[in-house]
Length: 317
Ligand code: AN0
Ligand code: CP
Image (cartoon, rainbow, N blue to C red; front, top):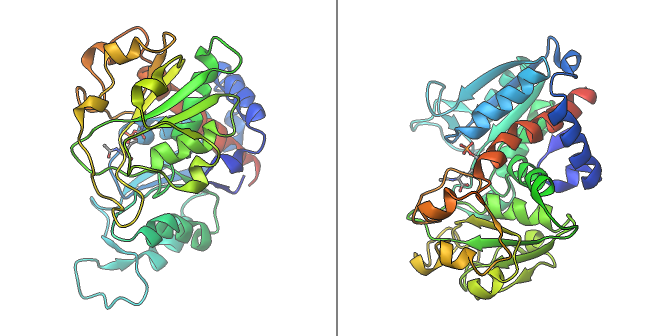
């Protein structure tokens, strides 16, 4: 595997889940693959889980890891070509990428949507420069339009907890005080559309996601109706995608918060969220603390999804 930006890079998804469950049982069995190899992780944005789980995954594979926080301690990077660099950014990405690539074998990149230009965000301007100019395998650690390590971990979690062959999985928008990217819901939809699940998306009008991720999924604007019979409720906030409101908050309607009453409409559904989560905005304390909450197992599976991706990259070196 040379790049990891979406579900398509995993090939057969059932095989990928099988490999993940095998890796989970035997996480130190592939240590030889990474001996004397280095994984460089580059963060343009904050992280708790991705930072730790991806390093852990690389270490399980015998690799060395290096972490760079671009905006803290490194030179601030200009990302636009043609800019007269007389501002606060002393270095250009076009030098920084090949330099960073000299010191490692595999690169992970976190570069969120900036909401300045939809065209720049949806063309994955930063991630694609890493793919193009590093000459190394590159994986997304949440880029502008996707968070495929998270969605893969979520799929593994659903496979582990599902009680029927084809569960009903509902992605629900929920309120949040700040504008958040569509990366997590995009990737979740990307994966659920390929998985053996009955997938429904629910959100207020105006929060429609990009067609390339929604594909044939059912969109139900009535959240309560969407919850009926659900086996998994996956909550997430995102800002508007559609023009002319790209990146904007259209609603902070607290009627969309996931609570015990609404979970009561489901078929005893599990609650999922990628974390970090704002309690009592996205989900009530009661629901996230209930035995139905899978937020910790999801986070634990981030080590496993990262390990499968890095393992496949090592195998392709
Ligand atoms: C980010 C987001 O919504 O994309 C990261 C989630 C994994 N969340 C925040 O910035 C709060
Ligand atoms: N879920 C997730 O990616 O968390 P972090 O932003 O803390 O890495």
